[in-house]
Length: 373
Image 1 (cartoon, rainbow, N blue to C red):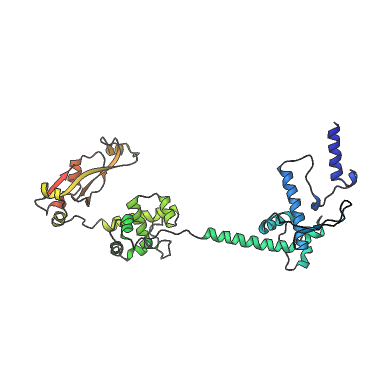
Image 2 (cartoon, rainbow, N blue to C red):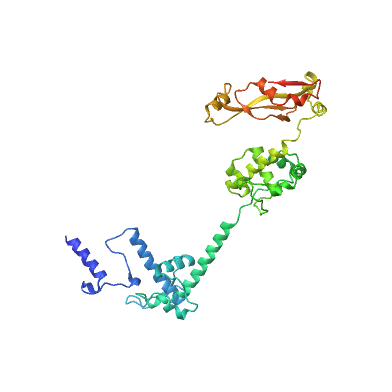
């Protein structure tokens, strides 16, 4: 009980003038201090703020944080003078931020003489007004720091473009499948000027095509589509490499895949008998010299259709899944020479070969052999 009374007396002495509760409490923010009954992190932060304010006031008044001492004592006849340099605990930007938050400085005057009309003067000592030049410098430093940080964030990382790999044939073949950049450029020129006026996926059908500038030019859009087809990279990976959003990558890929399909499907990719014979390997020349193509029925998984009849038609007994089936043919050296349209997964290989249209491509090629799995 006595201990608690002593603590309350100490609290009264600290918070009221002369320890008398009838007097008004001390309201000067320059003399704030934590309660002696509290010793948590909040009290420590309050002590640190008071110490920083005193150091800032001393620094703004003298220009340097130095103190001299000491007067002679009875035990020593010689006087000793020492000088201690106290480093400010905070950086200039941190000090400016702390002053702005403590004194709520919203707008500083052009000259220091008019500072009294701007800064709040309730309970502030005269030394607080002398911190205005420091506040100005701190705010300028803070502005420069934020501008530099904003500039660094706005700087785009190096993006992936065809110009970075076009001088290396190995990289061009790795990313696009074309042997050299000249062949890639020839294919791009083959597509014609229509690549500059594409109707991009997601735009309104029938809307007028505007020649607005896009982040990727048509050549790099084709490069993006070929990288996807060649390496099957994730959309997010492509977005990071090319400096785009995932939505932009999806729009470019869908547009160019549909464009390439409609532009190339009319071409006759079937090679001649002489071209196939000239590329036969030694094994085929010895045992199967008349081989023209190797065919196989391939299946890809699809989502389960909602229509029951379509579920039955697409069900594959071989894959035990709903699939779409197509016929593919390749030359003996591995080059794809024919791909049929998609059919339901329940169709047989014989029926698929008959209705796919592959046999009609062989009518003008007598004496050839076809291998089938």
